[in-house]
Each structure stands twice: as structure tokens, then as C-alpha cells.
Length: 276
Length: 312
Ligand SMILES: Nc1ncnc2c1ncn2[C@@H]1O[C@H](COP(=O)(O)OP(=O)(O)O)[C@@H](O)[C@H]1O
Ligand SMILES: [Mg+2]
Image: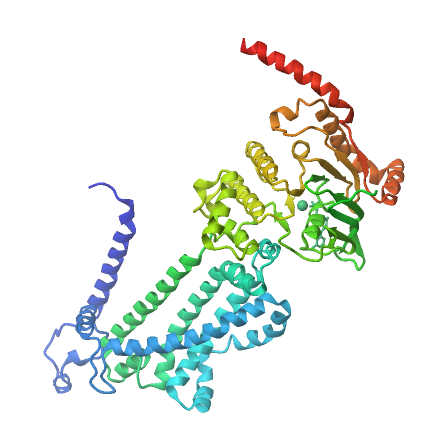
């Protein structure tokens, strides 16, 4: 066979997967009953019942079953993984888009006028490091709706990276490009849309990518708190049911969906990228 | 000085806050000169004497500390489509293709035109600089020379009344520079625009300009002389150096740049001359090649006979 260097990372990846899953599978086998079970063990249902992390084979079989019918709905505590993920995605996207709607225009203004930057920077610096979940009680008290409160938490955590990146991108547009707009007598509006926006777009998109990543991290915790629906609630609920197979399966799904969100935004950023 | 200039620069002064001090640093002062309509004027001076600053003030992108600029009788107070600018670098928008960079300017200049007309007009100027093959490429995919050609096409396509060029070929290698200089002559020959250009290349200035302004070293720089280039057009790189006036002008310029620009600020005699320059309302006008006209005719006759002999 011809030597194909492009295949090397794939081979290494597969070997790693095989070793990792293999050792996980091996380590989570129940110990062999080397002697007859004691009366106590018999009474408790045998050594098998000892709580242990389910092996990957069990998770894969479970995943296969779940994914073959992701949208079933059998009451508040038994919904398909697809439904739960859809709830989470709905909250993340709503909060994120609302944040974008506010952060990008505000970032534009802050980036264009240094005086606005100086005036607003202290607030941004204080508000930014607050854990979004710290807002939750306040949000629940004021909004009085757990659904909207979860969206608010997503909103508040996605706003900062987009605001900061937009302001930074706009403030650092090359002076020469602004001068091109000025010598062509473009109005402020047209300068903003035809020169500053495309020039700052890659930086803005980076901010959006950071925001959606954080939002997806935060939604799990937020849903564990507010309960009801969503992938975060699902994880917590299955933990309460001691169904670790479902917990591991949900963890995997959180990773996969998060990766897809990032992939979507990274393809958009490739579209607005330019080379100087 | 009763000459009617198209562009008039009067007593321009620019001061910047000096770093670490409270007082202001005067980059140049008492700069007065004029540009006639259709004239090609180059300005030469050492790096840092304030050439770009003057050009930016002319463009309306920067404000003078004192002094005024009038163009066509109107004071220059801000940027305008009447004055096109080609910067040394980065004047193309990197996210737009070659064609879009030119249509960007044309659309701003002629907002009433439809899309087809804008593209047709832009293509005409891209053709003039020989870039019809590269219209869909982004600036990053073009060589430095091609990028500057796009800039030139864009600024000529907007048909400004005054074209300002800030060392447009400074970053190019000598070969590319020569080719684009000739393209610039060609486009300029067709449009007869008024041009003000900064260069640090003496030969380039002689090839292109009707008149060359010489600037002394900064700080407190001044425009000391205005040197007429009386070499007939059309000129091209190979024939211009055979004109008997060429070396007279060239030697004068080089002498100014190498020694006199320094002397003017350093020596006693130089300072006295500076006083004179400062007192004058316009730079001293010189024409080093003035007495070379007759000689040139002779020289060219000799050359043509040589050529004939070579053919035989
Ligand atoms: N924004 C600024 N602040 C302070 N000094 C400046 C500024 N811009 C230019 N200068 C100074 O003005 C002088 C002239 O600059 P410039 O016009 O770019 O020179 P040139 O184009 O002739 O090389 C330089 O000495 C430079 O240091
Ligand atoms: Mg300069």
C-alpha cells in the first residue's frame, strides 16, 4: 500500500479511541464471583448490584436506542433526547440572538467613540466577571418565569464577549480604510456598513463564537437549577434516577451539539474572513 | 505672483505636540505654493519633513495648524470626491475584489448610475492599467504592483479634479515601478488631471512632473524651491535620460537633497538663505534645463542618424 501521510492522524485517532474505550470497558467489568456469594450478598441481589460506571458498550447500545426515537414524549420526566436538546437549543439561541441584537450595535458605538469606551468600560469590567448563574435568583424574582429566567441567564453571559469583541474590532479598523471612506464622501451610515462592518466582521464573529460556546456551557447548569425541560434538566433527572448510562449518553450529546454550534459559526466566520 | 493657480496653498503651518514636552513641535511652516490646472507637480524632501502631512491636509483628511488651502477658489475644509488619494499602502479594501474596489469608488462618485454603467466605467479604467484578467481576485492575491494599479484605476475612475499620490511606488521594485510609471503617464495623458505627487525618487519626479517642489529638512521645514522640468512630452523612461536638460535638473535635485537641504538648516549662509525663503511668499522658481532646448534638437538629430546607420 502506498504511504498516505494524510491518514496518519486518523489512524492515531482511532487507536486512541480504541485504547480509551477498551480500558474503560475493561475497568468497568463487574469482578468475577470467585467464591460463592455470602448470604448477605444474596440478600442484596448479588455483587452485580454494586454501583459502577456503565461500560461503553452499554452506553453505545443505549445511545442507539435513544437516537432511533429521539422525539418521543411520555410525560414530564420521560422525553426523548431530541426534545430535551431542542429545548436547550431554543433557550440558547433566543438568549444569544437577543444578546447579539444589543451587543453588536452597542459595541459599534463604544468602538467608534473613544469617549463612550472610557465611559462604559468600568461597567463592562465589573459586570463581565459575574457568573451568569449568580443572576438567576434575581432573574427569577423579577421575571417570575423560569423559562424566561433561563433565557435571561444565557443573554447575560453571551453579551460580554460580543460587546467587547465588536468594540475592539471597530476601534481597530485600519485608519487608511476609514480614510478611503472619507475621501469618497461616504455618509457615516454607509461608512459603518460598507467599511467598518466588513473590516471588523472577523473580530465580531470571534466574539460570537466565544459567546455561543459560553452559552452552551451555561445552559446545562441553568437548566439543572430551573428544572422542567432541557438537556441540563435531563442530566440531573437521570442522575436522580441513578441511570448513569443516560447521564453519559447526555454528556456525549452535549459535546456533539456544542461542537456543531461552533462549526456553524466558524463556517460563517470563514465567509467574512479576509486576508490583508 | 499674479499667476492664477488652480490650487493655492497659503502659509501652511503644522505643529504636533512634542513627545514628553508641553510645547508644540513645528513640522513645517510658511509653506506656500500653487498648482495650475492640469499640472503634474511632484514634491521631494527627506523622510519626516512633512510631505505626507501636506498631502493629507490637501486631501482634507488632516487640518493645518495655520494657513489655508483653496481649490478652484473654494477653501479646502474636509475630504471630498474632488480630490482623489492614492496612499502608499492599504488603500484597497481587502475584502473586496479588484473590480469591487473600483466600483466602490465609482458608485460613490456617480450614485445616479445603474449597475451596468458603473461596471462598464470601472472596467474601462482597469483596462487602462492592464488588469482585466485579475478583476475577481482579492488584493491579497495580487502582487504589490498590481495592487497599486488597482488604486490608480480607482482614483482615476472617480475623476477627481485633483489627484493626490503619496509615494505610490515606494514599496515596489524598480522594474515594476518603471512599468507602472508609464501606465500612470498614459492614464494621466488621457485624462489631463491635476496631480500632486510625493516621491523620494529623483528620476521618477523628472519623468513625471511639470514642476518639482523641494522641501528642506524638518523640523521647521519649508518648501524652498520650485524646479521646472522643461523636457517636452511625451516622455518615457528610456528617452528622457538622453535629453540634455535631464542631468542638469537631476544634478540640481540631487545636490539639493544631498547637501543643500542640510546646509540650509546647519550653516550660517544656509540660515541666511532660509530667512530669505521664509520671507518670500512663494518658493524660488528655477529652470535648470531652460537653455538646453536648442541643444536637444541637435542631439536628437545625431541619434536618428545613428539609428539609420544601425538599420543599414
Ligand atoms: N500624529 C502625529 N503626532 C506627532 N507627530 C507626527 C504625527 N504625524 C506625523 N508626525 C511627525 O511629523 C513629521 C512629518 O511626518 P510626515 O508628513 O509623515 O513626513 P514625510 O511624509 O515627509 O516622511 C514627522 O517628523 C513625524 O514624526
Ligand atoms: Mg510620508
